[in-house]
Image (cartoon, rainbow, N blue to C red; front, side):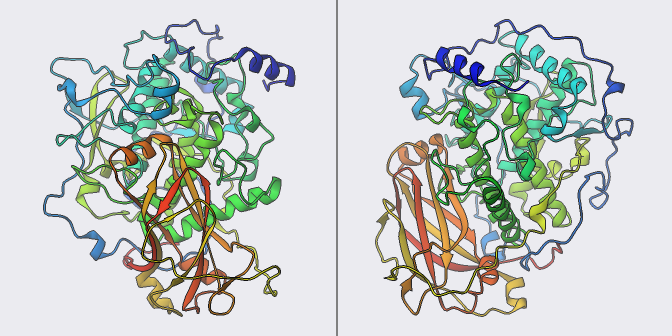
Length: 600
């Protein structure tokens, strides 16, 4: 099924335009064989009926319960949890008000592919008025999502998957299940097509809404595929990019004759290329390859969990309420930052970054759903590690409401609080190795720094352009904190006043280290702690509205692991990767944890 060098060369020579001229929802699809009997599919527990269980009974999620090295702590603190007087949960748009949905925005597609219809992404909700029902969760056979590299060797499953997508693409253009109508759902909620009553766009990225909304999106998409082939056990595969053997682009999406193939990807990243969590249209600044890059990725994910377990906003993203927009003024969670890098890595390197490179078009590539299945799996692992404590005991999160088309062609509304138990959805994940849960950081050799030492100063009171590597001294709020203090409070780096001065994608990486003496930096950047990552549409919206962003990263674990926690001051290094960025200021703060949530 893999592509040969000759077939790749032939395809590349035939592709002369970056613009997606081939998007036809009625084009003929390759004829596929009829799927075999569902009973021949080698699924786990396919005859177990799914029932709704209490919060502590989720043993159907197949994973290793080994302890993980984590920082002590809990949930968001009371000071951050205070609600504004006019706070309210997000609500879906008025589907009967046609002005509530407009042409979506995405700078590069608009300017470089004029005349395309990719941004006309308001779903065609049927009915006048539109009838919206409360969603009744299905009580069906448990569906098991399997790793993409495993289903690649299962011809029965692959035939079903391709048949389902083939049928979805063959539906009438305006059918709510049509492949491109389904892609419009993501575009509409991600690119300023839908607006709230006050005119502020609805946005499902860059905030605490990101993971719950995408869980629902996958659920309905998956059930529609199953409906099309009359198989309630059908489940999407997941791309386990958190495991060494899964850190290459899944081969199931590389067959040029398959309905799940998409030609608008970076073919330089076809296997055996290893995905880079720090990718930004250039190679990672570490210059690592192979096993070293795998280790670096795993350690990035390990730190994401470690810092995010006691303080969910670091993992999930900032809060957003009715009347607010989840744009770059909010700090996205680091799981979403890793996810953004994979969008960069899969999509075409050249601008416009069509399909996976843009939220407006990402769901037009079937690999999108495979990527997000693993993002959802990682969220479920995170929730399990927290013993299923609510990440935010905040009604404005729990009662945020979305609308979707279900597998019965009905418009249904759902809430975040019902997404927190995957038993509601009747699916689970087949186990895949999770080496990052127990991965230990590399021991840092305590040797005399080699190379020239440079003097570093405080950031200063004014903004600074990130047009080169910036190194500054940061004063910590308290050094040598006790275990109890770390349990109560997380130490957090706040970068604010972030301004992207062009309208393209943006990324910069963040490192911390000990100072040499009182004010000197060595030749190394230090210890990586996370990345600010934005796709083009988020940057454009941020710039057009004259808004400046902020960004938060946990420091408790990295300071402890690298024996810097006794220092009064630390070295901060900001490394520009892509985009023109200005930083307003940097500081280290203590954020209150919720000690009532046991985890581990």
